Amino acid sequence: MSGFGQEALAGSLFAHWSDNFPLAVTTVYPGTQIDAAGQSEWLEIWINAWQRDPRRSAGKEQVDVSVTVHCFVERTLDKGRILELADATKSTLEHQQVSVTDQSLSDPPVVGHLQLFETQTRTMTRRDRDAGRHGLQHVVLVTSGVATEV
Image (cartoon, rainbow, N blue to C red):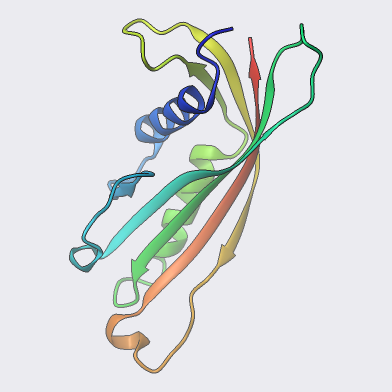
């Protein structure tokens, strides 16, 4: 079916994120940039793995994906803020089903569904001498999923 591809998957996932993430935090999407020096906290989201599953010629297309969100918070802020961002990220992505639509159309039909699974969380915060002055707390969340054409 036309319209089921990386552009539709990414656009639909990012629209889901924008509509459902509960906190007012700047999100950086692929291809965009921010001046991080002017931010005390921000998120970066992207789809960093695409794996098309083998299928028969008449079968529905399936794509395994991996969605990564990096959460950054200045160390000078409340230490619990990074955990709040991580929890909000997890609740926005984990075990969610996202309708995949052809974003190029004004009234887009559903061309597939993205089923997201468990989220793994890792802290990447590093301690160093200058961390108290300008360091960042850094947590990475990775959610796997499968997109299936309808």
